[in-house]
Length: 112
Image 1: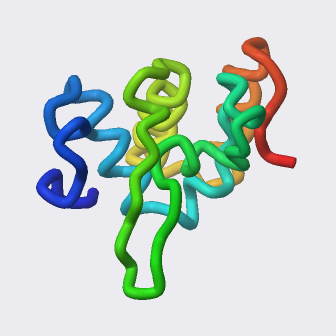
Image 2: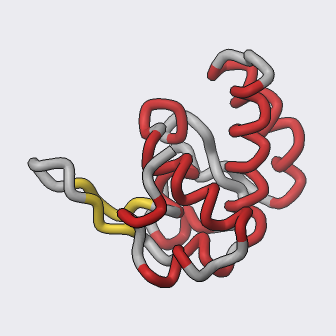
């Protein structure tokens, strides 16, 4: 998990589930870039659930956070589910399959 102090003030004052989702997504880009989002954020250019939290990372590792997940429970729910499954020992492919099965009813995947 990324230390909470490295996240924006808006994230630090958000509900616990949202804070944890930001911390987890920022610290686990390799996993989260493989996990789709189903909230419709593909329309704003997001290409994974990771993009709901992180807008960019500079050459020095500095993160510019995206505020989208602050107001989107689907994004946060997907990340919370991914966190839980990783703790349970599931591999990234199993996590992706479970997310697809659970959330595809909300709309299209944002992973092209």
